[in-house]
Image (cartoon, one colour):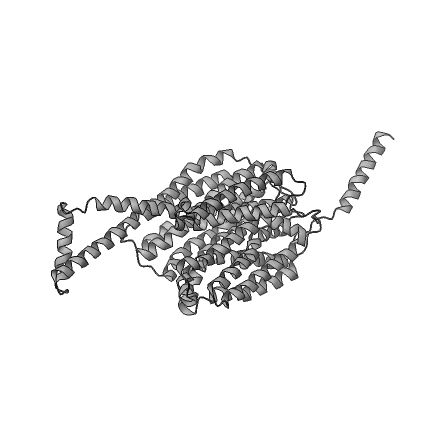
Length: 541
């Protein structure tokens, strides 16, 4: 056979292979718009439900006759289910079929929402919230994978921008929507509101979303990996959710859960790297250095986003007297700004804008946002936060889009599904660490500031004596005796000390988050981006 015949034979073999492997057809027109809207709505359903219930906990406690500690499990159970199922989404999409898994997850989430709303006791509600979290946990990574498959590789930046809108809008809309529903209806409507939206999203997904032509079958179910992940991640999330309220390792079962989490997760990593058919393919981290760096940055973003979003409402509601609805309204313009700039930023990245430069600007802006929050006073009002929170919205847009694209750059086929699952899990864990560490830090700083303030309130401090005497004299005309006036004056002083201690602690917490972003800026130097590199989206799950 001469060289010409050999070349012709090779060409024929390539052509035959191309015919055997079906080309991926990207969506266009109205179908593309409907699929995009559907997956964004599904992702936002999951994110809104992470925060919508927070403003209703007091109402749930009173209505179901549960303690605040018991009712906190309504939040904890959802978070645990979420963080377990998210990294398994790529595997489950392959096992059940991506569209079937997505539609089934939406329906499970919707049915659980109905059951949550009709719960008659706290533990029924906790159980159904856990089931809701299992359905909801799949929506974020699967929505992202479907969106990437819907758009052509050269439109990946626009897809990332659109998806990031939902990432930021969801957690911000949650408290606003929850506050409105609780104020004007009842806490049950925080769950009932999901039902019509969920049913519509399930119908649209079943009608318009297609199964990939390239199917990746699951040859063997990795039961050991699934069990180790569930135990390890579930235990870790439980520790982060409950540790501060139980004084961490002073409580024996927190210590035991910590040991279980460490051992299970270590065994999970070893098992997944050595088994032939892993439920979560951790080797994808080795194939993509950018995914590994992106995971660290995503963790930091989750820490800052959820940590600051945890402290801000507590600060303005407890100390400044904001209502839940006003708090949501103050936060909303920030989220809208992120939504507005997300698409242009995604397109700019696709056209060659430097992700390092965008992220450097975003992380610097987030540092300034948190630092400025840490300078607020007890006289601050809604107008004082407007421009500061707009800076937050700007920062999140410049951070989210590049780091989300970074997670999938250079990956191909089913690796995209594994990457989106890992990336979303890391962000959720970052948020859990952010809330837990920030909560503990605030408690420690409150005690420290209280001790410092009390050192200046001795009977020998002229300023303290003058203040107590002034308050006592002012109350003297409204009380029956000088003793009553003195007791009321001391209570007023105690209130002032407590308020000032918490105010200083909240300011310290904002500054701590700011410093974290500043310290992590050098990580951007490790990013390597090949502008000519395109991710193959065919076969994404």
